[in-house]
Length: 203
Image (spheres, rainbow, N blue to C red):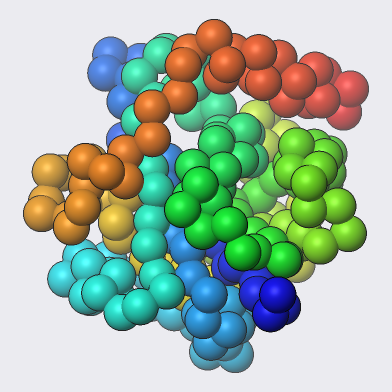
């Protein structure tokens, strides 16, 4: 079997609120090494829906998303590491020949969150890396400001995940939307959420 690395970028739509708790969490997938490279120059923050939809048309690229509607997940600081294993496993149903995983998360996360994500994907033990990318040197987590990671340029995979999540939240014409929508039973989410909630209590 060839040594295939799956590159994953994860972002959310940032539109949930207490009145209408509906958050799109989206993961982009690519087997193209160039998509997984972190460029020296910053990628523009401006969303270009047409550009990101066009990016999907090339071979070996795809996406999966889910929509969180339970109020418990409104602005939860660990939504991305909580959700991405469900999206990855759904993608792997049709793409079984994957040796390595490289995951890019948007935002600041406690090291414990990334460690828990690695444990969650135990079938890739020793063959998985998780990186997070922040827009500012100091990120706010809850009520505290922490230097969670160094300032880094943005991942291209996260850039497209951001635009596509925004496109879905605004009902733009994103291709193959129905078959890329992953339904996650609330009971499973709540069970996993307890693990992340316990981690933040230890900090």
